[in-house]
Amino acid sequence: MSSSVLSPSSSESRSNLASTWLKRFKPAIWLVPFALFFYLFQLAPMIWVLLNSFIYDGEFALDNYIEVLDSAFMMQAFGNSLWLAVWSSIFGLAIATLLVSSLRRVDSKVRDGVIAFTNMSSNFAGVPLSFAFIIILGTNGAITLLLKQYGLLGDFDLYGKWGLLAIYIYFQIPLAVLLLYPAFDALSDDWQAAAALLGAKTSQYWAKIALPVLSPALFGTFIILIANAIGAYASVYALTSGNYNVITIRIASLVSGDLFLEPNLAAAISVILMALLAFITVINQWLISKSYAGRK
Amino acid sequence: MHNVNTRFHKTVVYSIVGIMLIPILATFVYSLSSRWGATVLPDGFTFDWYVKLLTDPRFLQAFGRSLFICIASLTLSVLLVLPAIFVVFYYFPKLDKLMNVLILLPFAVPPVVSSVGLLQLYADSEISLIGTPWILIGTYFTIALPFMYRAISNSFEAINLNDLMDAAHLLGASTTKAFLMVILPNLKKGLMASLFLSFSFLLGEFVFANILVGTRYETLQIYLYNMRQTSGHFTSALVMTYFLFIFFLTWLASRFSRGVKQ
Image (cartoon, rainbow over all chains, first blue to last red; front, side):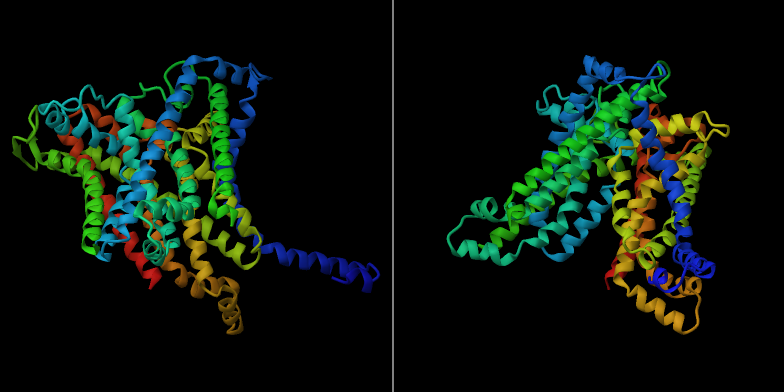
């Protein structure tokens, strides 16, 4: 630390300095393989997408973006993705909140069992889940027939937007439960008793105490659910063979379809998608800062 | 009053879980029924679909490929992540913040977006990785990374890393030896729990497998998708077999993670 003061720049001290520097950073060698693989499979593809979204016919241009924003088909895909993401996240979050709040009031055996079940069913997504839905809710599915027998169900179509919403909600619930469950530790049981003692109804307790305290966790979970739903691909692909127009299907078909490969256009859609997610996250952060817990 | 409340909460829990169970149970019944046409209940029961599945060489091959890819990518992840976390925690603790941002990227970037870049980067190079299992092993490392990093860094925070290392050094162990013989055994449970958990969702990965490799190296999920035109009973047996395996893996993971808490 004081080498510059003590020694008049002898070559020995400089080599000393170099060797201590070397000694200090030698362990960093162990970071190199990690960094290399992370770069090759995570960072490099992202950088490629970002750069090439601005390249059109070999030149720097915004044409890819203009093409996406001008296309009614692409806008429909964004619209469908957002519609599915927002509604499935709202329903998923609401059902999960209800489940978790009740879960903390039942005995621990049931609770552990349910948590184990959610852990497992969070892996029941994508292709296998779509097949299960086809079996029960498809055109000849058991539940479809059961409900039709009683004249219910109307013109419910599993392969349309309501069917997709059902399957999205199904895979959002376990994720929301796993994310919310620890957050409910913030609620003290005494508060509900105190509120009841002061004459508050259960609904008032939830509206004025529980939900405001939980709001950061609820907003945070909501964002993860939105991102999860917008990025979902396997379920839609397996259920509709890629015929329902959502944004991930569009991106995939532009890079791996049978005809009309346009990777740069896919890159532009990807960047818009990421920007959209970033925008939602920013709004969300702003809401959290405005909430009760943020003002504290 | 209290009793009424408990009953209400029980009703809520059982009805939500009950609805969540319907697709799984229905698939199970379907996989065991000989025919379940345009009726509410199946006509008869049989194990034929499971026999047919388990004797299908294509299924066994796909399953083997999936196991190979998962084990290979998890081995790679351990080899890359474990030394890196140790170096970060022991020598450069300030880097932990950066690492925590980096490991969010695989979460934040949907696999479909990553695969756009991956396809272009590795399709035209001299040795094309596209269509081979190797590209999947690399990308699966990034998927498993956030979970493994969190689990392992939690274990690191739970032990007194510097004290343990100092004690080992005092007793004459080299840093490498101390890491292998003192630190590693302390991480074992957290590491195993995260490995089984990662295993179970890598087995379910479809996006990368479908876009980057597809039928050129048919994994379990791709096989499942390609079987969609065959009998629904057969695919149900397939789904249930897959689900049973997932059940087993998550059970192992929870056993290990329960050990961590104790």
